[in-house]
Length: 451
Image (cartoon, rainbow, N blue to C red):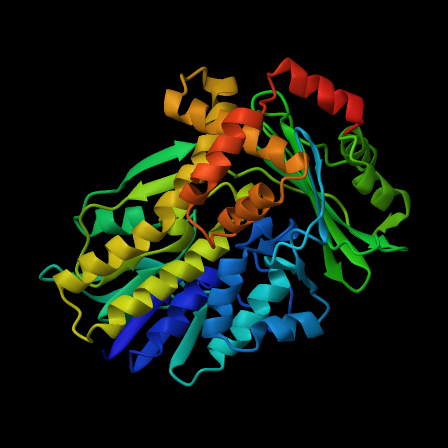
């Protein structure tokens, strides 16, 4: 392959550019934002101010693409820790006992992670960066992509020749418009919106919680819309994200934000707040809907990945990991041969989409409950059954069932298929000993425990 273009300079685009650089003579990365030389935020990542924890599978994928990345981030202050042993997890049924689960997580500020990956990508000889540039059209000849029309930072217009164009421009990308301009149908879209919003700020902590690098309080449909994440991001700083679904959003003023946090009744979070000093204002993010675009017909050589294809509710932390795995799927397709034809395009796009299907189902199955509060739309019985089963599993985890919690974490971090949660042994436990939030005995047990 002579040349390729990637649209989008986020994690998805950077991973795709790294993969393409192994197979193309020249790769051009087009990003509409001016790219900073340091860890400063860029305009196109408004969610960067909120907690990011790279799931274990995603961290492994990035490490394979960029050897030494995890250690570089650790040296910069981003801790690596066992999610089961060094994070406190609170669910509807109480606090889950901490155990060594063998599932590593690294909490790092999104801007720091993206800057570290960007330095490695832009340092590659084959890659040229066009930041401050906007994709304005596709060049298509005889059903095949031959280039991308762009408007540069100076307003000048040009065309970048390419045999492959990868759109990784995120949930706000304009590819549907560009396809329509080129005579192709717009993709059909599906959205599931939990009406969830974040509000986050950075705190300086005087006394770190002993042996703890992360806190999470998971909300639970249909009557526990609020939750929180808190992450040790190094240097004595913690990033605390409060969130609420179904319109029950955290305030952005200082007093309101802290009151919302304390009303969660999470003793670990309260202890953190009691000896912390804010070092940033409160920042809010509200565009959290899940959105899937079904691309049916596209020019040969045009591919889509990341949030431009499947945009997840960020509260579940799936987006970066899915994007990295999609880039790995692109690598596999390219490794089968260098010829870019219709068969290649279809196979590659099918594999890329396949990576996201299970995470998509996991995300929307939760958010359909919250969406119902707004739309009144009926929830499929399969989704209701899955939600009830999940409540049973979380009840068992809160009662100290090690197998259930370990499996839950492995599924959450995409190291195991969700079917692992329905193994014969776990299924039996869930049906015999599990409880749901509507079970009177379970509610009484939780109330009596003080959790």
